[in-house]
Image (cartoon, rainbow over all chains, first blue to last red; front, side, top):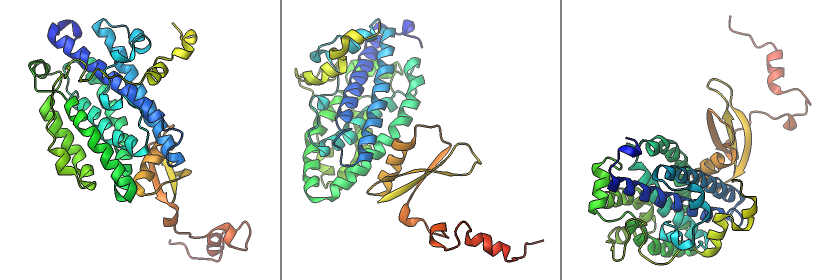
Length: 262
Length: 82
């Protein structure tokens, strides 16, 4: 179905979802990029560069889709303040340790991928047509995260840090899939997505459980019940916090605005 | 550990050695090979630990400079199947 034939409520829901995914991928790319220098080995730095490039490519095509919903992609990419970003909260701060980056690689990148998998048969054709290539590129992100996660889970000091990182991130990631609300159900009934909230959480936990089990805390983490106090379904955020200003300055290209081609 | 990376352009073409990389295990070797060498459109790509390569011969290991043992063996009159 084309955008013109979509009911207004569903149309708003799709636009919200696309912008949440675009901003999350933009920020995820920034977090990978922050470790191009300083990764444990040159090859891991190259992997971060490659993953950042993929995420920014995905973000770019998602921002372009916002034209369908009467938004200007240029404005979205270059004019918004940090508080207007809808990126997943876990990405608000730069991961200051490699164990946190790997936790993001596994827990956040997989969450976004699970959400895209729910769009494979989407009735919103412009997104459906782009999703397979995007998911194909994500396969190696998962492989990178999983291999590093296992490796860190085996070593003494890193294991504790990785566990702390995973425990701190997982509640927010589980909440990010949202409640099984009427607006979420409307998207499912319009076949925009094939699953919402609790089903996505179940699929997600099936994906990450084998890795969490390596830390010996799989059961504890999997039993977390998300709470939705203050959760805004449009932004999928529940705090008034925002991505750090320095990162958004960089994302918007503020320092080189004069060179931005119209 | 060093891994050697091989790839081919098209189905049926021979594998070419395209480079190497450092990786701590097989899984990361796969990922790093993809990330590092996927700038071209390959038909397939393979990675193998350098330690797992079994040397058959090497010019630098023989004293017959420029002549591989295999060449001498066939020249010595090994019969070809008819």
